[in-house]
Length: 480
Image 1 (spheres, rainbow, N blue to C red):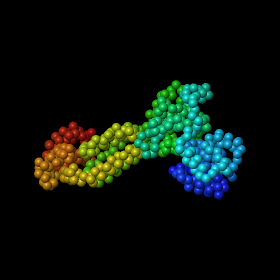
Image 2 (image 1 turned 135 degrees about the horizontal axis):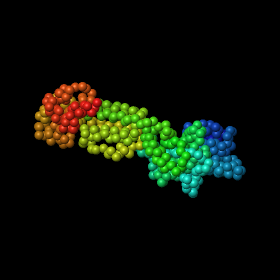
Image 3 (image 1 turned 45 degrees about the horizontal axis):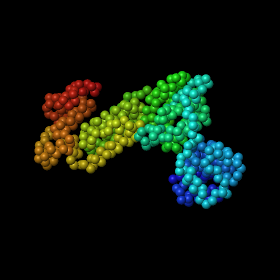
Image 4 (image 1 turned 30 degrees about the vertical axis):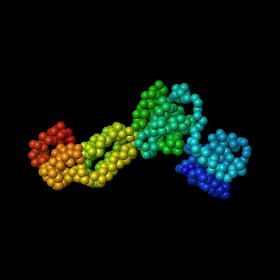
């Protein structure tokens, strides 16, 4: 759908233009039709369009003044000027502003305007003339006039994207043109494409308040244009002042390393490196074994996951620690659900967005819940049974009888369904329950043994050491 805004002070002409476009065979929608340039400016302060069609003469500001005002924040937008005047001075000014079409009203016939709109939007044009010369970093910064600088490193990512945008997804030349045109208009600095993969900016430094005000104005226009062109959010990481351009490589690495922090952001924003808080320790993502393989288990783990992500959004620990904690969580999950297959842990490392990582984990839990519903027999029934009866004196004969199977058939069927034999699985469940009790209670080893269905405390001690590599006392001491 091509979205068009019309600005025309004559009501009948405005309505006629709107009707002409919306009845054209192309997919055109008029999202705004305004009497004045001032009304259009208000609209464009919060919205955008693919094409702007404006009369050159309006009651307030002219159509050309309107284009000049809105173009900086909507560089992607194609512009068409309608005029009753054949005066070349109007056409020349329109060309200087980069207007795509200058049309005389009396020469437009039938559905020609709709055809022109569709042709204009077939290809996205470059926002400014491509500059043939490649800006050289050292040569384009006048060291004699500028005393200090700041470096800005750019990260782009869509709100629903897992990874940050790469040069394969973004046309860096268009992005550079957008940035440099805005930098030039504010005399703020120079932007550079590094190794055809990434963009950074060297800002000319000035008084803090002036720099911050100019930077925020630049960033607002840049993020809007990047959103319009690429549908991406922008995260700009700004270093502290530096005066020696010979150190720019080191400064660049500092900014790039800090840019991993974009993991925590959803909306476009500026991040000042000197204001970044000291990293806090990553909290534990708790794996709940309570009522395993039931819908209540899924609900409990969903709550724990949401709590974990709420905490890390607030504290912003090292991203690598967050991913390590998620991997640890899935390692535990695999122990209890070996038949689901191993997760690709490299995939976890690929996430550059905290929102998308949380969404992915919750989707995995949702898959598990569906799995429970689809496989209420077989392994799920065995697990549910053991979860309910592990505190009792269980034997192979008893459980086989409860499932109306012979002992030999039960043993074969259990191993096939669970990937391990009955005794090994029961021992694993009991030891996990023992760990929970060691963490949450002051019960003695003998009391815990009874709680988990093992009447012989010496056997419990030996089993615990065999399965954990630690004695009960050593494990409890480590927890403290």
